[in-house]
Length: 78
Image (cartoon, rainbow, N blue to C red; front, side):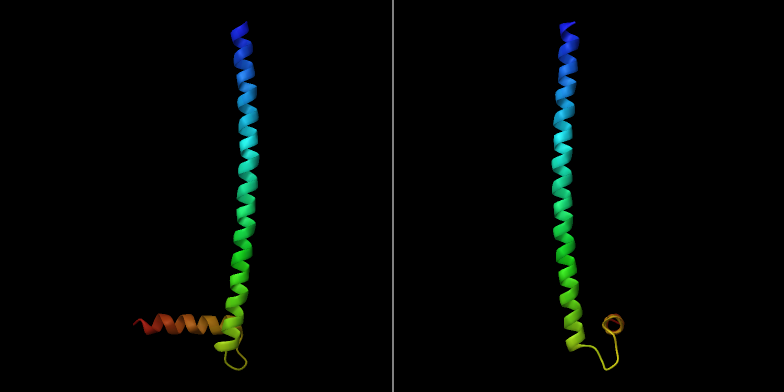
């Protein structure tokens, strides 16, 4: 009888510990993802401005300039 109560209490404690760990883990992962997305978005904005100012031709969009440069880089290696 006493042993079954100990096992039951142990399971409750284990569930509480695992639940707390899961909450902390989720918070850390979500925070990391927000930071990562912010950094990537910031880099893409800077990259787009850089390409826009230095590499676009008249009437060409940033995306077209990036594609053109990627194609040129691919062909340069041949």
